[in-house]
Length: 453
Ligand SMILES: Cc1ncc(COP(=O)(O)O)c(C=O)c1O
Image 1 (cartoon, rainbow, N blue to C red):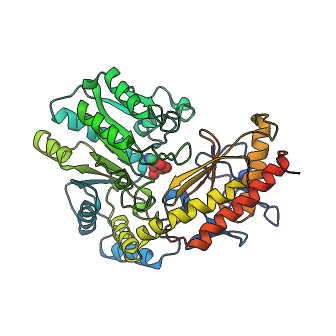
Image 2: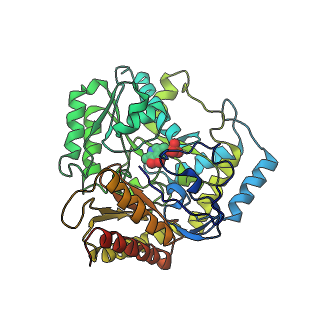
């Protein structure tokens, strides 16, 4: 669960509307009246309603690739709204979604060249499920309905995407969920056996019932789980051996987060589908989608009457216009290169910082996507649990990070981690500052937990 410390507003007042707005994944026990209200942003920084500035170390929510306050994106949206405010992609086309689909075909790996647009990452994963099942049906294998994904992985909240998600606590309030979703150990839980576990799950399926394997290039939940060398190649071989589709859920990892257009390029394999959202528009407007291979497209077009799926706003003209401009900015400003050039620096800054902190268990990541894992224990080895855990991790660590001027994520879906995913425009100064603020926050946490005198 994400945890955010409260802020004190000078007059002790709460923001108007607090009682009317139901927040996403936000504990009711938190004092919502004291949660930060973010009012503006510029580049890698945002400001709250008290005028304080913070590094947006999470790019909103792994989203704001080109940074905040980009007039070019606002203008692209406004231009499009004046020209054609809205038209759907149901039986009609419009120039921006055509141009964007063509652009994505040029950027995607291998023969992935056809895109279905939706509005969010969850809808993209939902679309993957439908595409995979309809593909197998069109291919004469209607019995293939199961999906394999990894434990702890987060793939969204709609009922299908939630079923792909490997977090039992997130599903419990909504059960029963649809059947046919299997979860295998992730690469942190079983680095050597994680690929074999996928093969075992397919064998157990049995294979003629398995539709697809859905994985993130680098798994977010659990803290930037970079797979071991050869993992993706092995998974590709396994999927090919059993006729199972391989899906890269790149909702976080695409559009430069790992220094590549779709993230998966770093691992040298070509999946059958890629789901994306977030960074395609840098979050200036909502958009998601799935780009599919020729094999998937042809099977559907040749053997099915249509793809039985749709969304009023999928491929919205204004979102598509913003996406095109966003991609142009990423290219024009060399942001993929910036990530490649500085990922080592960022990783070294965090690792160097961590050397002075016995409470840090690991530093891992890739591109502009990093995590610092923190041991939930006192200096004498006593585990931190329940109220005490909340007191130290929320009351001390999260508070110190935030008060130090850094918005990042303290996450404990698995082992506790601090996660960073700054805008791709971040320079050395911003990256060093992130490490510096983390350094002070960890020092205070260690002091209170008896690691320091
Ligand atoms: C890998 C992955 N898939 C899907 C989703 C769901 O995206 P959304 O919140 O846009 O529905 C997320 C959200 O963080 C994600 O990280």
